[in-house]
Image (tube, helix red, strand yellow):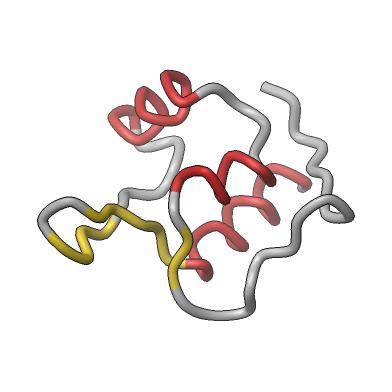
Length: 70
């Protein structure tokens, strides 16, 4: 997995939640790789906001970016 992120193309908010499409803008992997990474514990688990809405805590994504850059 490429650990370099493109922060100039998309900036995550400081707090709140982001949907998968936004996560994949800063973590350059496929949807399949992302979901497999969740199953293995490599990537953070999502939060169900509604029955049909899944999102990730921004703080979890920021933490993941820091870990990948280290």
